Length: 131
Image 1 (cartoon, rainbow, N blue to C red):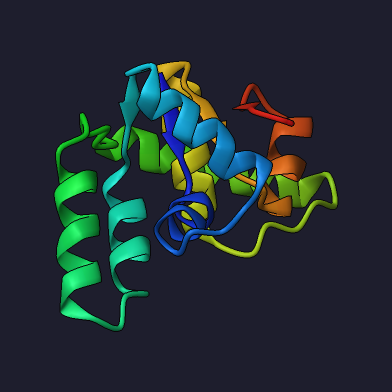
Image 2 (image 1 turned 180 degrees about the horizontal axis):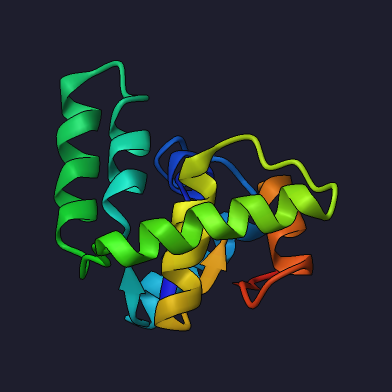
């Protein structure tokens, strides 16, 4: 399964040209398994200024299979954050650790250009797609 982070979804809906958007386009064209973490839906939808854009994105995102992290995964995300901090690696927020932990637990590949995820992947079992 592929999980697409909010940065890539935002670029996709805004028509940006990037290797990550190209990979998402290919996944959609091939009908590859995509999943979504609810926090990503929130992050993506809060960025829309128009109702039409919001509704279009909502239809796409809510049609995907949901990876809904149970409480234990949140505990593991906190442990991941603490372990990274103990190694001197700063991750900007808990949300990224929750998303990373959800991907780790489901063995999903994360599609994101975010540097925090690169740091997490370098020190954990997170599988991160790279162009």
